[in-house]
Length: 72
Image (cartoon, rainbow, N blue to C red; front, side, top):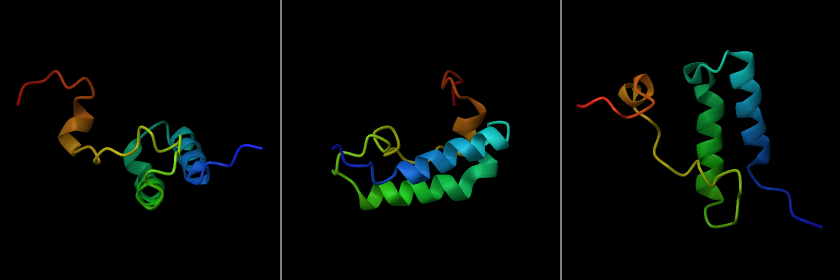
């Protein structure tokens, strides 16, 4: 039987929060922070949920330009 992803609970909490808040990330900072913490603890333990979550948090400037096309 496959093992449960150690950060699945936090990943689901993020999805639930984003859906409840019209996908405004700023309203879900606490659950996103919890996910980052979980991923730090479980680094290298094959967490599929953490595969795209190991990057540094986006800055406010990055969030206003999700395409990354604006020059700085």
